[in-house]
Amino acid sequence: MNSTHSPSRWEKGGSRSLAATRIFDVRGVEFRHPVRGTEREFVVIAAPDWVNVVALTPDHQLVLVNQFRYGTDAFSWEIPGGMIDLGEDPVAAGVRELREETGYTGKNARLLGSVNPNPAIMNNRCHLILVEDAVRTEHQDWDPDEEMEVRTLPVDEVYAWARAGRITHSLVLNALFLFEPHWAGLKAGR
Image (cartoon, rainbow, N blue to C red; front, side, top):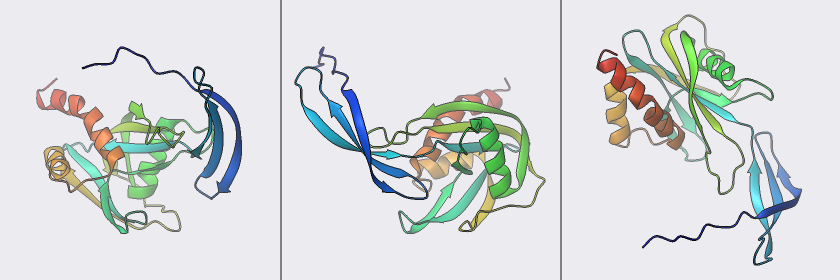
C-alpha cells in the first residue's frame, strides 16, 4: 500500500560547531517540524564536495586505484577521486585528481551527474566526471598520506568486479551506474 501523504519540510534554525577536523566539521543544527512543532538538534557533517573520475582509455579500459582506507581498515579498489578545493569547478577538480593520483590525462572531460553521499547526515555532493582518451602522460603527485596501486582493466571486467563485490565503494558504484549508458552506446557503435 502506498502512502499519499507528503512529508513536511522541517524549518532550519541555528547551528553550532560540535567538532572541527581537517576534513570536515560536525555541526549541531536545529530543525523545527512545521506541523507538530517538534524542535530537535540534528548532527550534520559539513564536508567539502567530492569528485570521482571514470577515466576511459582509448582501448576501452578504466583507470582504477587500489588504496588503504582507514575507515574500513582495508584496501579498496576505486576510481580516482578526492576533495574539491573551495571554489573549484567539479570537472576541473576531476581532471586534477586524475592527474595527481594516476598521472593520466585525457579529453572531453564532463559531468556524468552528482549524488548526495549520505543525505541523512552529510551536506555535501559528489560529482562524477567522465574523462575520455585517458593516457598516462604525467608523474603522480600524491598527497602526503596517499599511496596507491594504479591499474587499468577492460570496462566489462570492472563491471564484473562490481557485481562480484570486489568494488564496494558506494560512490564508485554510483559512477559506474551513470557511466553504463555511455558504455552501452560505445559497445553498440553509437
